[in-house]
Amino acid sequence: MSTETEFVSDALRFLQEIGADTSGVEAGTNLFDTGVLDSLGTLAFLDFLEQQMGEEIEVEALDIDSIATLHGAHQFVQGHTQA
Image 1 (cartoon, rainbow, N blue to C red):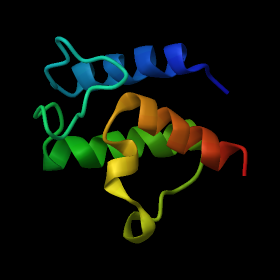
Image 2 (cartoon, rainbow, N blue to C red):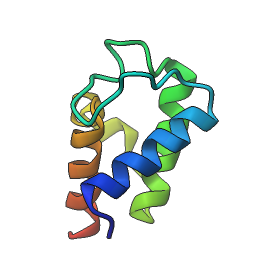
Image 3 (cartoon, rainbow, N blue to C red):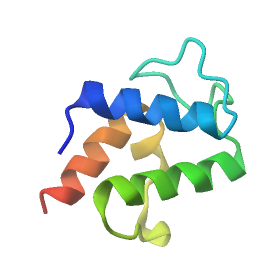
């Protein structure tokens, strides 16, 4: 299990690989409100989170606000990997 710092670094690298503008993005930056993630980017980010968790995310049960920031996404992944 990665620390939040490691997770944020990996997530930023992933977002850059899919072409997202991560300039100024920090752990608490809202990825949706700032336009870092669009609809296709969100699907790719969900795939990244599934890889981090090692399990599929039930999209129907997902509260999208819980993964709006990298901090929240890390908490989300931690909550599922500890369950």
